[in-house]
Image (cartoon, rainbow, N blue to C red):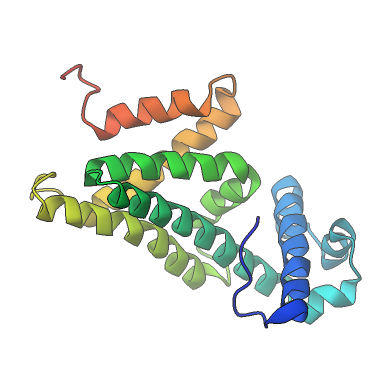
Length: 212
């Protein structure tokens, strides 16, 4: 899960630490997807990442903190990809509906690239006994807020109905992409990303009923 170095120092030292955290994120997300959070140990994470156990604790105070930061990192990447899709559509003069369509595609690309993270994220959304529950709600809202912004702009420009419940619609769109993408990867893997995007695009544009 690649991301530019932020808040981890500057120069070679900061880049090195970010690279180490990247290894730990990848090791943790893979192991937890394979065997669950409780069954995964810090020793296993360190071994999978190819670092000493002390390196894990140098970067994160505990396994819980590592997982919490993993959630922040992954959802931050998703939010950034959605935001970029909207901004690029705006830059070329596209409508807000077109921006939403491009955001759906960006979400599918992200999930296709990081399937293990997406599975973990969706699973954790429905748990209520985790130490990082409040963090998860914050990062979830970060992603949904990007979609809310585009929906509000669409309403303001008259492209979308003023009767739209922006908050609920944004959450529904994000949820649609997450669930449809996981279903695609688990049960319809023979379909291409473009095929899945085309189907979701029809839903977005209200053409499922056959109207043109």
